Image (cartoon, rainbow, N blue to C red; front, side, top):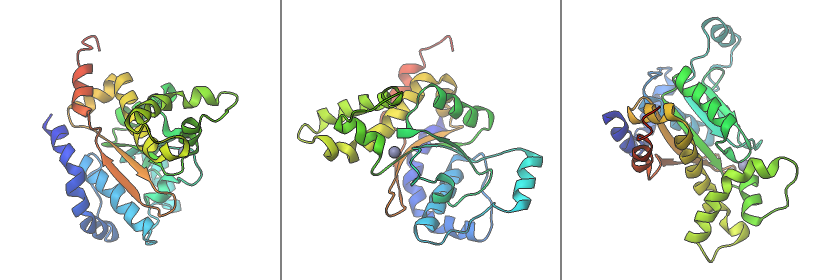
Length: 248
Ligand SMILES: [Zn+2]
């Protein structure tokens, strides 16, 4: 439990360690692949390198491909992000082959398939950090905010975003349509984390005992920077409410 409580303060302290992290990465030092703090630091420092046009493009060699084929994959982070082509996860975190277990889906929603994939990344591959990564100018969030006429299977796909929209409409009654999108993007990140906790007992357990830290973030597609939102503001109550599922 201490690990999880401590993790709530990690985001703030990590920001001050970014310079150190960038130095560590540039000197080739490796992070403990099971430490949430160091895993977050790797993502943060990688994004600083990318957004400042100082990417080092690690782990993309033929030798790296041979290594991960021979030894299997041991990614240090699980990230769910939008399918938007302007959100290239490994690139924006300046990581390479075998570094990040990525789930991409329009609107970065956590529905059955996505949660199953996340459980694989966290429970089987044991990544110590999990990020729900929204992004600015998200088409899926814009479609929901503006009530766009969508076809085929898209209504079902974006349905998990609607609860976030309802919260933001209540919080910002004077905002409508596209004006709601920036707030909705962030609310949708929290909604995805909430959906994940609600439906995954294994991730609740791992979050509770500090083996994984689940954080939200928003990627700015123009500046290339990631805004780190931290852990869900109601994480304690979300996990407390759900621990009464004693049959799990
Ligand atoms: Zn999007």
